[in-house]
Image (cartoon, rainbow, N blue to C red):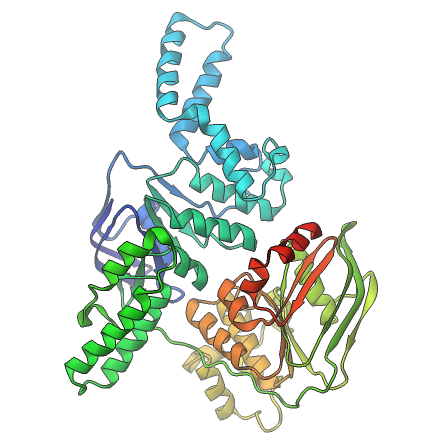
Length: 540
């Protein structure tokens, strides 16, 4: 158990939170949410002991082992994959090293023998004899084949290093597991595996994530960082989100009879209680949700940008034809004979286990790079707008202010300071913020700038490479809703399950041996179709 008592933290003169009192108990997965800059990752650092609170305390039982996800993908370059995973249990790893050093001594003494016996006893107590087998099982579950287990980390691509570090965090079933953005850089299959793993995890899990589907699948409670406080709320992310909206409605109608409010709350709780996601969590979560009272439902201070895409002109009969496109990077072919048609109105989600392949295809489609072979044919009525994954590629002059940068894309009718200021205000750039230079913006601010540009230009086709990268949950929600309502066509990549499921009606998976394309299908239908998934496996 973790007990947080009267905790406050001030950083650089700013109070992040004060008088925080919380308890985290085994069998629960807590999703930490809050606006960018609210202090979500900082809270995990406090729990881990990497930061000390300004006041108050955090108590963790001395016999409980805490593990966290390492964010430095290059921290273990000189270690083998197997050794890197086992380092997730530092006590066991140190015993293994001490044993090896003792047995390697040329002058092994009686005293060394006594020490070795003690180490062997502790080693067995920590289940050390199964350590390599357990580590191998974790790695294979994530798609790291046995042939790579003894390679140095430096020999792996970054996409596999991410998986090894996740295996390191999970290794040995820690009593407390801290995960900061664990789905970043993971392919869909590994994310699904992790969801199942955490849903059945019996110890404490505390996770920061911008992936709404992931939070909904694994979390039993939400840990909301807001108003300078940290509060626990029963249920998953959807329950928190809907309950905060319900609280806003109740606050806006203070004169409503309490009986009507209670009835509204009961109906709301009943709906969510019936939709528990995972079997192990379902019964306990349902019982806990049913205990929710009016006082438990709180408003949020979150602000949501206004995102809406209009079309300057409708699409004609033809949209996009991709014919026999192949492309290589450093001599390795990542696209081979890719051919598909996209029809007017299609919203196409492009998937790949190799993000280089999906990004290359987006760059070829948008004319940023030329394929080694094959061709791209856009329909005559199409006017597409492209948003690259590399944010810096989208800004021609980083010295410009936000206002002057956006002015470049405004029509004569739009090129008015009052209009542009109001427009940026709806995208949460208020007051003096619009005078900030592009070069000092955060990743999330740069994405909101790009979305502003795309809204002004009113294209009938949007081409977007991982547009939710760098965005907070509020901006992701607004963008998600806008793309669902958009009347044009969309071609996009994403690792966000809900984004794909609620927007795409045409799925294309790209592998080194070709593609699998299915139109008039949802993302979940694509994933759950066994015949389709057999074809997907053959791509790799």
